[in-house]
Image (cartoon, rainbow, N blue to C red; front, side, top):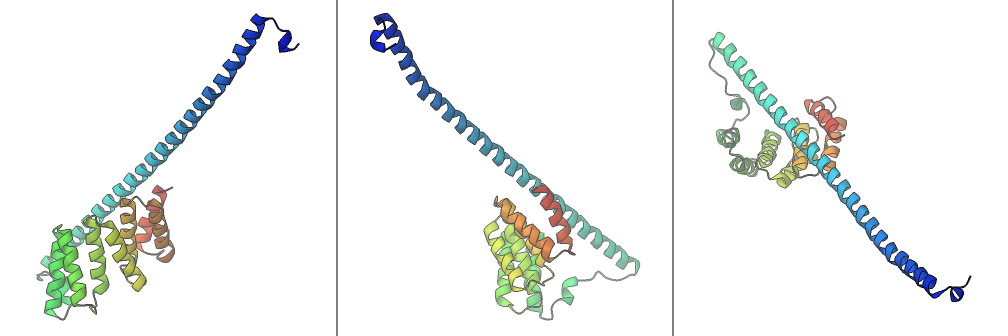
Length: 225
């Protein structure tokens, strides 16, 4: 039946029904858009929370590892002192065997004293000054490692990454290379670069599989899964 043949009352009802459908469609589309935006925002929040949890777990793991290392150092020092006491020997000064130049030794010990006392920005400056003064030192890699570690402890993560990556690039076979990369990974975690940290940890496992740092890197990679 044509609309022209409908009674006036029925025609009005049909017209109003059609208009209602036209207005309902945009409202429904608007509701769908809102729902999609809400889902996207929720996914982003979940992803952000997951990354924050990973970052917190890695930070905690780093702190525990640092404490274990410090306890091991203290235990070794105590055992050494006990042995020397039992043998009636004076305590040994390890740094005396590292340097032949008294001024070089004094510069190294001065920076290390600052590092051990927790004055990390000053220690980083001391190690940088040592590198400038003694670029051919036999302990150069060790000093460069502690310079980067001091920068990390000072929360200057970008500089720590730069210095320690340069150390590994210049001497991949350095004894401190895997440890330097571990500090790089920790700096990347602190910088919220979890992908970079994962790549660095994988590099440690691949390039230095027998090192103690590789064992630590494997446990960190599990936390990033």
